[in-house]
Length: 243
Image 1 (cartoon, rainbow, N blue to C red):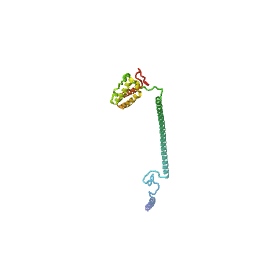
Image 2: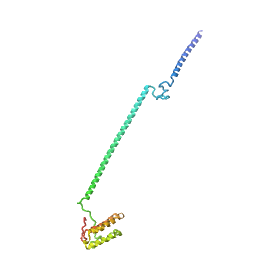
Image 3: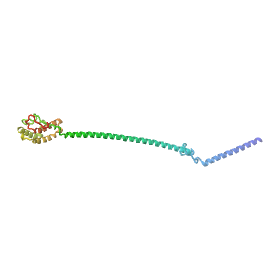
Image 4: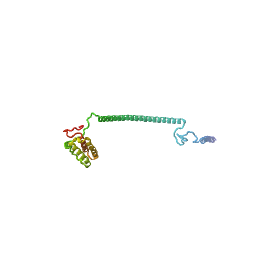
């Protein structure tokens, strides 16, 4: 009788405990269903660290969000300081380059001014020398007795001046100097130079075909004939002007 009563009491206790446990599970289930995982604010599963569902990192609370904002601000401040420093460095480099350019420009200007000063000085020296009336006159070419016989007036022409284009000048000049050898008063300096000048101009056309030394030697011969007309031809040492 006593044993039966204990089993009945035990069954009653388990039944009541089971009902209580069931009621608690039903309450939890009801709360879970009423709220749901997508209705619970700021849960790791619902929103994640950056507010995106399904990602489990980042700020889950207001304090965490505040800390993230402060971190972002500090990072932005650091980036600003870095860019400011780089901009200052670039500005200093630009100032240095500008200063170098100014220095080089000044040096170039000084060099050009010095070159111009030298050029002006040399030019003035040349002009002064050209207009220096105290300087001796340039020597005029003179013919030797073997080139122009002072007694007979015979002209012994260089081979190059024996070309046909000079024939007329040669004949007229020879006639003048032959006459001049007998009577110097019959031949003037102007008569001779009236022939030697065009003869020289004709000869200058051969400049590019004759070696330089030979060209000027023959040119001086023509000029020497004109200079020979400045004196009578009978002096033992005929004075050539400037000679």
